[in-house]
Image (cartoon, rainbow, N blue to C red; front, top):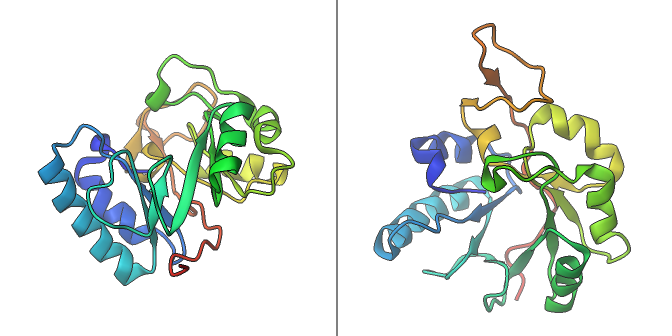
Length: 194
């Protein structure tokens, strides 16, 4: 997941993603011309690294797919904060559901996380891979992957130092949380399909 908070941390984050991973390009607040130029740069890196790029919000240039309702002939990912949203994703032909918020997150400041068990109930039985989102870190992923998620996604986890969440215990000795992200939603979506 990308957004304006990442700043220049976006570029090393893209280079750390393993081939086959996905990037949900958001940057909702970026003016359209700048958003288009930024997306072109993201797509160049993604192509070289064999990453799938889907665009959230108003598509500004073609990508491998979309995140949400926009028209596409490619991959479609879908936000699912409730069972109703997951069912809408199924009806729209979603290839993956981003279920959130698993944990408290700055993207939904003040909203409690729903936890992995509730998150799995949101998409259970729909036959769509579910990606854990919301306050995710590598340590959170290790604890919840047994629930059956196909991967995890994050914004803050890809930045060198992120705000501490109350349930995290990793500390760099300076009072700042450090994470070592490994995986972002590697679910085998084929961006080349018609």
